[in-house]
Amino acid sequence: MDRTTRDLIIKAQAGDTESFHEIVTIYDTRIMTLTLQIAQNKEDAEDIYQETFVKVFKNISKFRFESDIYTWIYRIAVNTAYNYKRKHSKMIIVEPKEDSGYDFLDWVYDPQSDEENREELVMAINQSLLTLSHQQRTVFILKHLQQLKIKDIANILDLSEGTIKKYLFRAMEKLRVSLKEYHYA
Amino acid sequence: MPNKLTEKQKKQVSLYVCNALSISAKRKIELEIKTNTELSNYMSELKFTINATRQISTIAPSEELLQGSRNLLHGKIQVINREKSSASFFSSILNNIKSGVSFVAKKQQPVWAVATYVIIGLLAGRLLFFPSTDKPIDISGQENVDMNKLIQSGALSDLRIDQSTLSPSSIKLVSHSDERFNVSGNVNDKNIRQILYYLLLNDEVIDNRFQAGKQIRRITPNGESRMVLISSILSETDQKVKLQSMETLSQYQSSQELINACKRILLDDRNSDMRLEAIEILEKNKSSDLISLLEVVSKMDDNSSVRNKANELLAELQKPVSIEYNEVIK
Image (cartoon, rainbow over all chains, first blue to last red; front, top):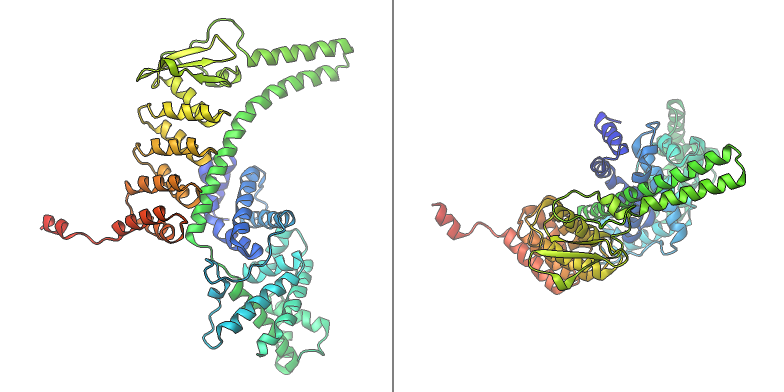
């Protein structure tokens, strides 16, 4: 953690709201990306974002510099997403729409294949992600989409590195089996 | 197809793909992959799975989404801070009473003594909440009054603005439950201003908030009243009160806080009149920073007047320097 971030945290712990908002600006792109990946719809992602940072604000005085602030914020975000999902059953995979600002198809660029095939792959991936348990899915997202280290994921989820590797293997194996046909298509 | 692979081999390859193996284990599996086609296919399938999922699920949030969320968070944090500051006072009183009671309990006093202390504690609480004398509460003129004490006395909880006596610059405030509280003066008097701010932001009755907002319009614009009005447009639940605060703000000189609040209103507020007012305030502070926001509003807003207004302002901001202006320069 660099000195500037450390200073900002100390000031925020002393009640300086502006410093808190600066901390938000440093980490919120990553957190919003994470919540969009977990929730897969914009409305829920925004709610989780708000809940996460309100909790960060309320608990920042409890942060003891024993870990990196981003792993601490990630932990809050992941727990908030879990609880949110439990409370709101509407958090399901949404099908891509043409006029959506977050059309998943936008991120798949393959000039060789046609739209239909891509859409089918998108659906298959979304469905496969749904077959994973919460833990498997979160570990997969944190590792392969957020590109965090296994050590950091263990820290965020408060689990051993061995357990993380086990979840990761199970998640990858399930997804591999579901998507195998598209690889050879 | 990689069907004959052992569970251990699969695990090793998946950890290899995750870059989670030691150097020696990594070298070992690399050698194995070179010679074992099934293992190599398995790795290729895993890599395809990861890449395809990454491409599809990596959703970069737009700057508008982030800015809107940050603004909303700003408002929530303000509310939390406000709640915290008022709650801390009451909890300190409660703690004092509680600690008095627990001290008495620890000393194993007889029941009658404990009861006496509790009654004393409650009386002390009452004395803290209500003024101790029957003297009229005089806060007229420029005399400084402790607003916290006034709030705690309960006098502000049912305060009304006496409409009948209003003259262009004067104001009269009366308390329904406490006849001693009867204040008149100029809306620009410091104490009266503070009470009006309090009523606008805290009174439970919508009409009182509306009347307070109406009086705040008469106050000579200053930084303090601007912040109060900004707080009102961001946290007020009643549309009429909120719109009145917004209209008052349109008479004020701009500030960064006001611009940020208007941007948030433009993105989040459900009332199209509020959004129109917000554009009008932003119009007075033309800046290229507004272009991306206006582009979103001009396309996405569900109200045609707001979209048109956003389009007009957008066109102005994107307009090249006019010929007349160039001629003047020449």
